[in-house]
Image (cartoon, rainbow, N blue to C red; front, side):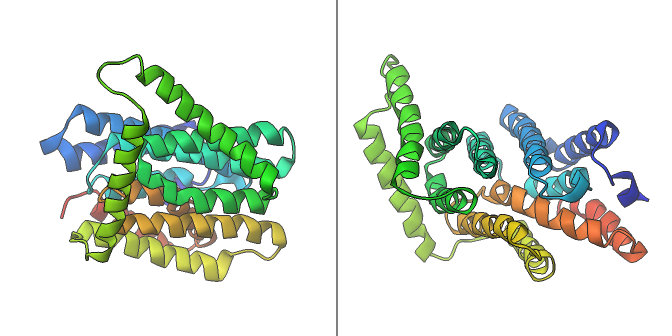
Length: 297
């Protein structure tokens, strides 16, 4: 019954999903509720809406089935972890760059799209410098859906540098913060320091271990059963695979990495649900998972 209700992404399902995700947030974060948590929750909603747009616009999931159900399941995971609004905002801008990558396959206004990819990716790395590791995802996506040569790389970096110049211009007028060479050096030092932590075993808590383990199992099932029977589907899934691998790397770099797994987790989980929707046992498992995941442990 619950899976049947969420079969198509329409306004009633969106409203129910938003309310349930907010309710999960209040249950799990009521003792430490703050403006930053509220802001992070609003950003999560925008990320979800953008994900739906990417999925439906590029036919990643047939009829966009059950995506609203994915938000409810994911909310229980993310609200058990540390929330950082800047990190979540950086993921939103990263997805804007990914959206433009998917649109390259239409071969229309490619120069503008390549510029926009660099623009949004640059903003993402300014908000969270560690996001630079997604450069592999960006270049692989451009190669997969269009082509990767010197011209496309220059167009990408034209967009990337433009946001840096804008940031330097505006922050140079401020006495509080200055986006200059010294800031870039300090950012690079902190970036290298974060990677040095990878050699140390991070002290991951149970919720931090649980989510990547579940997402990995879901993704492996997706890869082995639903990777695609034609070249077009395989290309899209290859890009998703690289995106997922870059996201997993975040576990060993930052604590609040969970949001980076959202888009791959949403696509793979919902694809599996859409194929197994007729199983009463599977529906009961989904219901129990939502209830179990909505309470702290």
